[in-house]
Length: 261
Image (cartoon, rainbow, N blue to C red; front, side):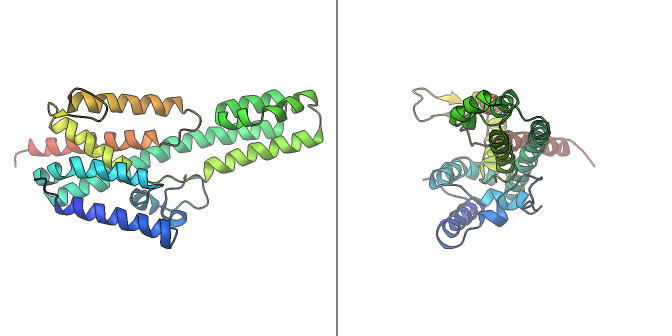
């Protein structure tokens, strides 16, 4: 029978309790979700607290299922203290990498916004929307057509500026939540330490070795993060951050075992 380990059990309980509080009793996202570093609501403690919040029950269920399946084996092998450190290290690392990428993207967004505000024109608006908000571009085709028909209209210029500022404010205030970074760190560790373990996945009619599964998943996250498709609200670079920091920590632990004093 499957036996859950102490830290995994406690993490499951904490995440479930926090989700219930956040959803039904008192909203916690405002203070504890990870905000972009350019946001006025950003606070350093959010690099830690964001990983205990989840946006939906499905989000929570997916992450906790991964923790439940892969976490106990690692905790039994490392011990509770080392496993907890690994979980928190990869979760914080995921937030750091995501925030770094996000900072670069928002800096580029701010620069493009300033260019548009200085030279508002239909084509400049099209370039801005197709680069930073493809979904809003599709939703504003009628307005863009009207702007192109009257490019000197004070009303259309004012409305286009308002739209661009709205997009910038939306990007700088959208928070990130979820334990996915830490879960992907656990997945990375499992693939590195048990590479030939065969996994049976839903909707896949044959077993896949852990090393191939982790490699495929990592490449997919990189692809999806670069594509940045409209409507995709998954923090792919946070997932990659969890995997990267897991790899770094495991390499460090391995180097320490090879030292003799």
